[in-house]
Image (cartoon, rainbow, N blue to C red; front, top):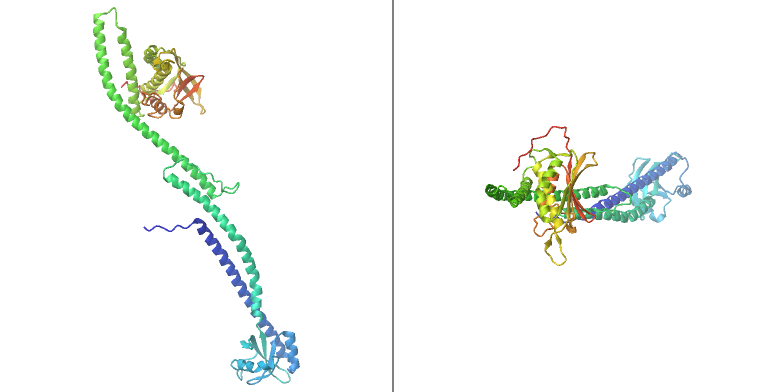
Length: 493
């Protein structure tokens, strides 16, 4: 397909406007000229008719003196016509032969009287000729010659006001039209450029319509508003699609890792249980406490594996009523060994009768993840003399409280607060995104798991730095204990 020739919008808008103005001027000029010509012709015919009627009813002989007097009064010339020539006239004698030749072809020996005979040229002038038959004592044929020299003057007098107004109108309107169309074209061109940028994938841009008239809201202004809304909506949709894709990949990756880890953990647990049973049989009175610690560490790893499996599973799995105090007790039991080993003081407090509706394993894995991150942050304090992590007497506090949302719904907020340094400042806006981490050895899955669990249960997760401490808050809708359970509790994977 051959490329189309570009036609600027300003030209497309201006040419029709100027063309219509010129066409209107020409139409007015033509109509004025036609009307002036018609009125002038009607005036000549009326004057001839009035003179002819006067001559026809006159009983005075048409002597040269009478004819000259009539000529001076009416502005017409009068010719007394014989059979084939001029008998007498008010015209100069030198033009009478030319008049005879001109009228000889127009008049014959017999012609109709009281009629207009047309226009004849005589001595460089044009005359409208009318014939009349007088009824005086001596009937005579008289020709009334009305000069048409005023015809062009009448046309000019009728046309020049229209031409003057048209010239002034075009002088004023054409520059105004050029300015207005150029202004509109520039505004539309800016929109076209931004639409091209959106088509190229540059979403989120907004356009400020500063070229619009002050205080106006025309179609282009409303188009700019719609364009900005579309651009922002596309940016949000792009971000949502990117986040969904990252979450899908994260779920697939986490599920794959979790299945492999679970197989290894199962073998390690079986071997540990077998070894523990042999040790117990050999020494009943002195059980090996290290086996208990190892078992708890395996429990923590299994909990994290359950969280990874939940991240890759469908959100349509069965939900059940989960008491919050029992959930936090299980979390404390799982993370206590890690806190004791790291030298971190762990405290847990909850609210009475707090119940949420959801998947126990997912919720527990989310809180365990926040708790383990807090323990690691509270214990990872580097000494001034060494860059190696050294145990510190940091603290981690897990608490719960009831909140009233703006919608009126009661929410349960689980807060995990630690004395660590918190995530790096540059990660404050993306800390919950998959594969984003501030730990050198981290892979950025844990907090993404927490956010996914929060979204799945209709809640949210946030973090803040306050008073030198880091606080992560997981909010969940509180369920009614009086209502029936939606489903039975899930079994552990």
